[in-house]
Length: 521
Image (cartoon, rainbow, N blue to C red; front, top):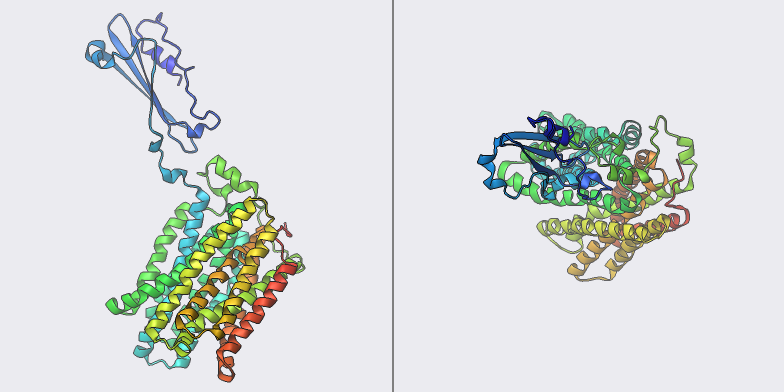
């Protein structure tokens, strides 16, 4: 309602025309009304009967919808004259409220809310994965499992994990990343909670539950890749993915740190109950805050929506996957081959590292476990450092192709160099430092091949990640198993030579055939 008309309606004399206050305005960023602070003005009309009409108009303080309220009081002039000396008839007093009344959470970019929630999901992902590596010790003692049974239980996770990589990518690209990631987290959280129950019932039930857990975690990476491809601009892609993947590294650290304490205080089942319950909390936040794309978020600010959609993928939903087109592209195969070469070395280092520390460096089991945490911390730090460097280079005008090649070359040649130095080192401290540096430079891959799925095929980034990660996990599992055979007939130097050779192959393939340009629309 026009404030001038409202003031006039309160006047007992129709011939008294109140001042036109509707035309009064002050500019607080007129080009962006959302940034105008809330305001009030106070107007007094004095008439012959010595009554004043006080009108206060309060506008909405932000948000997508602009709204306001009008309050009016009619009071005796005698009662309020002293407090209103500064108010002169026909003049308005504009009271500007502090912009701090607008919550900083409301101003926080929504795309980074999505990134933080994805980071939290991957933190829980690895917490729930590594807790079995600690809990398996008291479990095997309680149920009299032999080493072969322990190995079977540990590997059962990958049965489901491999099964849903490509399927999860197809599902995410056609249905939406929000729904698929929500399914994955709640599925593996329930499987984690059911692990003690399944172990008590019998070994077959435990194997099924662990495979089910792998199904949930298998869809997580393709779903995350799909949703970030729609929310994150190219200039922020590397550091957003680096932050999300560093959640996995910190999840391993958290799981390895808290699992022994919980087992000692409350017994081994408490690890699965407590870690699994955290997934339900995350699920509630994700359902209420996340959307598969900026177009689906009704509360997204126009400026951020414009930014995210400027470099976004086509608005048309994916109805079918162009398999023939995808498999005909050389950069796709470069991605698959490079992912395999990368995971061979990474899986070996992360799974056999405690044995190396114990057999070669002569650390006891406690020391081995302590030093196993160091590479994860190093990877979390260097992944975010690499993401910041990559996005800075892109913002300075370097081509995405050049940046991806630089970062992945560091991710290959860095580990290769430090592994070759291990055979020349006699100091345990230097050996641990070399291993940490190897994994630290390896994490630059987050800004290389792990960011490339969204570069070359943003609409099908979930499927593409599912394909390359399937190849990578197969290579990692096979490499982990082959390491035992190599050690039985050779030495640790032979293990490292194979990894170095594959790192060099990956470097050549990546630099010859990869690209940072979109090749599939």
